[in-house]
Amino acid sequence: MPELIFAKIKPVLEKQFIFEGELTLKTRFLEDLGADSLDIVQLLSDLEDMFEIKMPPEDLVNIQTVGDIVDYIARHTSPV
Image 1 (cartoon, rainbow, N blue to C red):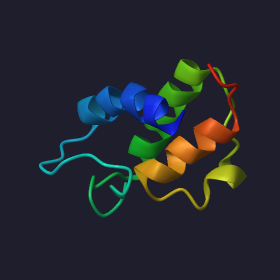
Image 2: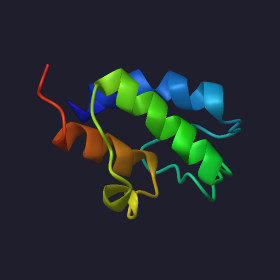
Image 3: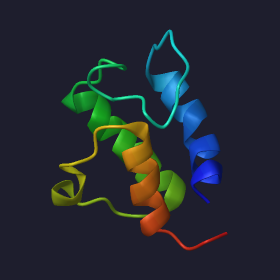
Image 4: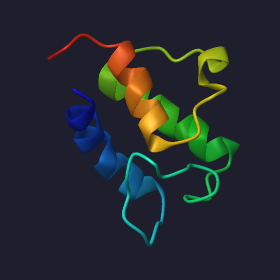
């Protein structure tokens, strides 16, 4: 399931962030994508809509990589 989630969110990430390397699960939002807090809020809003979940801010404190967000979505959605 993480592979399917990554495949689904990858185009969203590529549209929102300019990144010259290969986007992977280890890509870091701050260091690699240069994301600021507004970028993250917009991304999370888009992902909440896409996956029909709610991501409370306190759950997101430790999300630093694309893999972290993929894992979070996998834990909070039903298998397809």
